[in-house]
Each structure stands twice: as C-alpha cells, then as structure tokens.
Length: 509
Image (cartoon, rainbow, N blue to C red; front, side, top):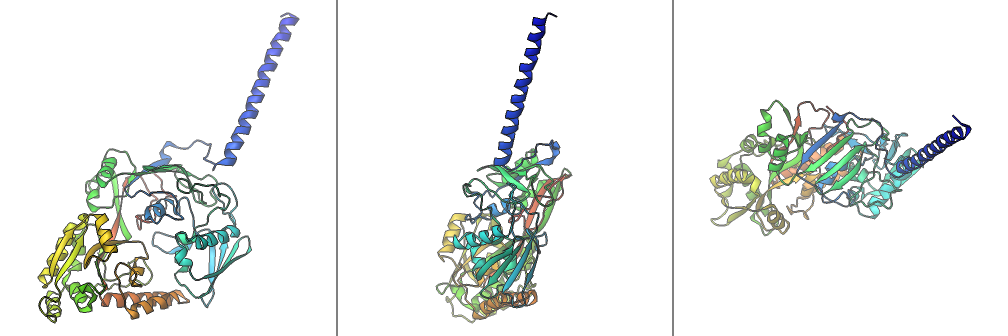
C-alpha cells in the first residue's frame, strides 16, 4: 500500500469512528430525554405470555377519577394506577397501602399514618407526607369524589416526611375505610399539566399507556416501589354488550372477561378451556319502596305486608346472579352485617291479614317498575304480591326511563340494583330516592359514625340495619354474584367485588 493510500484508508476509518461516536451521543441524549419525560416502560425483554386482554362492558366516559362518578373508572384505575393511603383485600378488610401502619386515638379524633419510605410515583418522584396533605386538601377544596367522607376533617399535618396526622372535629368511624377509596388517593402535585380526562398519573403498579373509548392499556410501572406487577401489559377492552363480550371469549380475543349477567357464563362453565369464578359482589338487588307521602308505601303496615308477601328465599334460590338472600341494607362483606332474612319469612296469610286492616280500595294499585334484565324477577315478585291481595301494575321500562322516574319519585316499587359498599347510606337520609325517614334508624347510624372503636361501630351499624329492615324501608332480595371467566392457566386475579374494585398486579399465567 502506498503512503497516500494508507493515509486515505486511515482517514476513512477516522471519519467512520467519528460518525459512530456522534450517533451514540445523540442516541444517549434522546434516550435520557425519553426517560425523563415518561414513566419507565421497561427496556428489557419480557415474555410474550406476560400480556393480557380483559373484556368488560361498563366503559368509563373519562379517566378523571377525581370528578367522574362512575364506578367503572374506579374499577379500572384504583389499586392499578392510583393508590390510596390504605387499601382493601379480597375479603374487603382494610390493609396497608401507601401507609404501612396507622393508629387511632382513644377519642377517635386523631389518625396517625406512617408512610412506606419506598413509595414513589410512576414518574420516579418520591412520594412523601406533603403529597398526602396536598391531596386531601385538594379533594376537600375542589369537592372531588370522596370529599363527603372528609366532612369532619379539621386539620391534616405532616410532622416529617413519612408521617401524616389527621385531626377530626368529631369522630367518624367510617373514615379509615373511606381512605381505601377515592378519599384516600394520593395524587402527584407535579402533574399540574396532566389532562385527567384522557391521562392518569399515580403511584400504582401500572401506568396508562393509552386510552380511547374502546380500551385502556395499562403497562407495568418498572419504577414501582412495592411488589412489581406480574403482567407487562394489560388491556382493558370494552364491548358494547354482553353478546359481543361472550363472542370475544369464544373466539380467543380476550384472556379474561367480567360479564355482568349469569347467562353469559353458561357456555364457559362446561368448557375445560375456561375457569369460571363467582364471588360475592358489592351489589344488591332490591325491590325499592318509595316512602314519600304521596305513595301508599309511606305506610309502614303496607310496606311490611309487601315484605311478607315477597318470597325472598325462593327468589334468591332461583335467580342465577344471586349469591345469597339479603334481609337488610348491609351486605355480607361490610361492617355491621347481620343475617336478617328471618325477619320477614314468606307468609301470604300474614300479608293478607295486614292488608285486611285497610278499607277496600285504600291501598290502590301498586305502580311497579322493572328493568328489562329483571323482567322474570319482576313477574315472580308481582305474582307474590298479587297472591297476598295487592293490586299491581308492573311496567317494564328501559334503564334511562327507570332512573328518571325513580329520581322524580314517580313510582311505588321498583327493582333496583344498588352498587357500592356504602349503598346502605341511602336509607340514612330522606333526601335519597327512597325518601325514607326513621329517627331511630338514623340515630343508630349517627351513633355508628361517632363510635371511637370498631366494636361500637359494628354494633350501631347492625342496629341501624335491623331497625330499617324491621320498618320495611324496602324489600331486600339478594346480594349479587360477580363473575369472572378466564383461560384455565390464569391465576392471581380477584373474585370478589370485581364490578367495582379490580386490582390486577398479581394477574399471571
């Protein structure tokens, strides 16, 4: 090789090396910028079987968990993307969340929480007591969802980075459980420019990678401060109806599905490819009574006669979505639960005797509203009532009209599905759709809230429920089942309260 050729060859190599160095520098800068502006999505390879698609039908209209009242947004995001001070396990017990431990003063006025020092937001920013204080203040000030549970809040302080002290103006024994829901969510103050309608930023095991009206894509938060999620990605896919959801199960479009109707699981039950799990729900099915003065159900004796007439036991045994018969406003997973089904056993003769007290025509015709999905149930209840001497006009109306008429008090009885673990609160105020007033029941509820320990809280809640049931505020029928269809290999998913609370960090195969 000539010296000229040698110099030219070395020059080419030098130029090539310089280009490589510049490209490496640009890649490094670009990569660091991406990492600083978004949650770490994980650059290491993940197994192909660590992604899942879950089918549902109840889609949220937005991701704004602060203001959106829908249970569907809570189902999707709470415990997955957003976390609260404390949380609930599969038995609905309160367990540590962001707070690893807590104590309550003997007078029930001071709650002290010790935070986990490892807590981080998905952005990587440290989560400390200042964020908890800020979040509680924002919830109250802006009347975000959960603010009602903080009505007795007098002050909230953080003596150090891992300690939060909440002081109440008066005891509220329901506070701790409320802090496992939206009242206890810790938001990231640094996300001031976040569009909460379409985005979410929390401290949970997942972050929202994308969202549209048909799906929410959750990706593993690799910066998560506690036990990491088993799945690298979970897509919550929303279908227009149960039929489309069942089709997706059968054609392998989803790994797991949460149908709301018992009929949707019939094919899967006998198919070895699937597991079908049923668990107790936070939902109740009742025949709601309009206790307003303009309704004949404002009369206690008429209400009690109706309860004796309705065969709750047979209905609960017949309805495929029934987990267990229910005799009062508090469900089996809630504090204060007591089996009250024996208070009004099916007794047609007694119902007739109670109605005979009234002159002919006094009770009139009962206007009974029924949604289409519960038409068969409505027919059973109507037959029960008619056998006892009630005149009943049963109307099957769509859900929109049903809700409108209930809200306007334009009904005597209606089949309703109550959702959420605090649905019994609708019987503690005359301002609800039931317009129920009973000083004794409502005094017991207030006494429960003023309790300074769990024993008294449970005792007074149970007393409230018994009084409301004995007074026949409505006819409680049953607690619903929640249904989960999954591929046989899947595990780690919840089976109770899944219609309202769906933590997915342990989902695996």
